[in-house]
Image: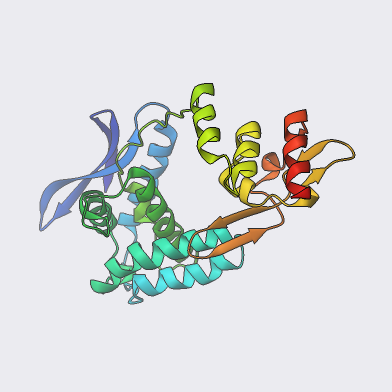
Length: 273
C-alpha cells in the first residue's frame, strides 16, 4: 500500500491508495492539521496510518465498551490530578461523554475517526442540556481531552493500534477579549455595595485584581500586618462541590503584594468589626 499527503483548504489530508475487490481506490483521511508549521506531524501521521493499514493479519477487535474505558481512566486520573481538575473531568465525562457512547454501546475496537467526529459534530450543534443549541468550542476541547486521554491509555495497553481522536477536527476557538472596569464603573460598584457584608472583600478584590478563587480563599494568615504584605495562600473553587486548597493553581499564582494604606485600612476595619 502507498499513501501521500495532500493539501485541501489549508489542511493536511492523508490519501491512501487501496485495492478493494481488485479495484484501485483512494481513501482520504483528515488530519486536522493546518499546513503551516505542521509538516513533520503530518508526515508522522502518514507513516503511522500506513503502518496501521499494513498490519496483517488484523488483530481481533477489543469488545470492551468505550464508556467503561472512560470510567477506568477517570479512576486512574483521580490518583494523579488535584481535586478541582478531577471534578471537572468527572462532571464532563458523566454528563456529556459517557452517556453518548453508552447509549450506542460503542465498543473500543469499533472506534474509528468517524465515531468521535460524529460525537463532536453533534455536541457542536445540539450539546447543551437546556436544548439551547451547541456547546462552545472550549467545552468541546474539554470533552476531546477526556476521550483522547482514554484512547491513549488504550493504545498503551495494546487494546487498539492507534488513537483515532488525534485526527478529529473541532471548530476554531474564538479569541478571548478581556475587559476591565473603568474608574467610573468601580465607583458605581463600590457605591452600590456600601453597607453590604461583602463590601471589604469587593474593595480588596478590585485593588489587587484577585481571581474569584483567591478572593474566596482569603484568610487572616494571608495578611501580614507586621511586614505589610498580602500573600495568596489559599483558594476556594466549586465544580460539583466546594473545594478548599491550601495552595494555588500553580507556582506563578502564589503571589504576594504590598499592603497599600487603603488595603491596610480595609483589613484593620474588618478585623476589629
